Length: 104
Figure: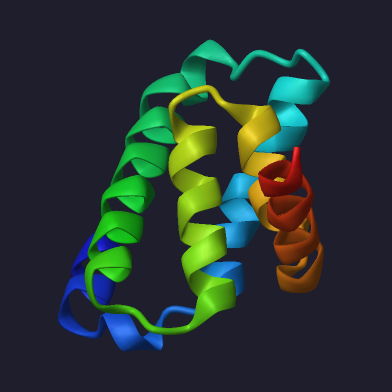
């Protein structure tokens, strides 16, 4: 998938990054380990997708896809809670939160 996205980063969609982020979030939140026989390819795929997310962040313009790319990066380094927030927060809620934090 790295090669596909490297050639056409504009083709990424929110679900391209969001689905693997959701899988890793759920796995982490439920405390499941990756089975040994799948661990190496699982982590390699997650790392490759995180690299693709970085490529997208450099050039991609779509806000929802950027959020899912950031979520995948967070999930890939073990930050499931941050990843989940990045996927779930809506733009208007984020603006409200920032305003509230600045007013404190």
